[in-house]
Length: 393
Image 1 (tube, rainbow, N blue to C red):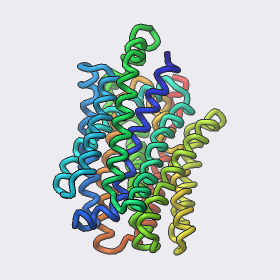
Image 2: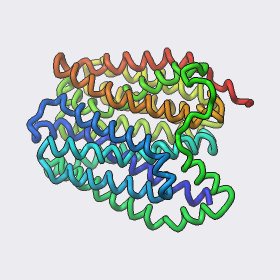
Image 3: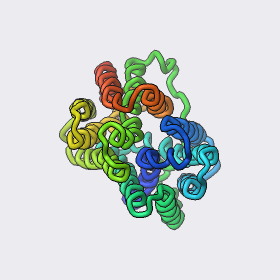
Image 4: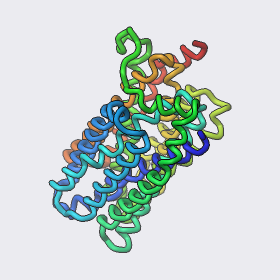
């Protein structure tokens, strides 16, 4: 039954990735249509992040009331409705309001599945699971670029993605019998129990006193800053600082997500030959190399640098997640996972918008420096994490 359910989880992660890169690729055109400053992208993304945090924290409560399959389908449907709303309205205020359900739809899936995969699957499965998120995140900038090139209409891009989300919702609904079958076997009951387990603290020690937890949380914050700032602002950086046309920049902004997707597929195949710690540090130093390439004032090096940053980011997040039970112990992993996801959302909520403020006051040319700072922070804090301290416990 695991082999039947796992592809369904993969499909859910495709739907999770599809909306994530849309704002960044569409914003150079969106802010002109909406007649708002370029920095207002931060308002939208912060609202999306708030919705994601709310639904993540509510995932434990919701899973007591509804099946995991129902929560998944409802979450994807909510995102689809928000995306279709983006495709209809030209008002920034309405789009800002729609950003909340946009985020609410994503959080529950992310919060309930990561800990299960970390405990019950090998590292390669975590990488492949998040690669499917990358597939969704890679496709949407191309779709948006197509809409901008052929129709000069960013709303068409949102409409297409919204329809795709509706199709994925239908797939999940059709698969409901498979989810019910899973609940009737002992091994799959373990899956259901894990999905229904709320994010409560199981350790008697305060979280802050657990060895390595503060560096781990800082690493998640820094990683979120690198990933989300790259995804949100790369297209704008290409247009304003590297003088690439809006439609081409929207398409090439997907290089970052292509890098993540390809990198995670590769990581899955080589994960048996490397530890989580090794994969994390290989990825971080690759991201550092890509960031350095962004400083070179040529279009081709900027585009290639973004790709390399994506390749570098690829193994970092899945390996950090997968290492949680061996770093902090299985009895602590559920609560620690909640704190790690919250830290990631904290970085996602505040740090990409912070660059929007910086760029509005100074210039988007500071984009490489901003990414560079957080890559360095990520590397330094990761070396303070005591990986595998519970590997034999």
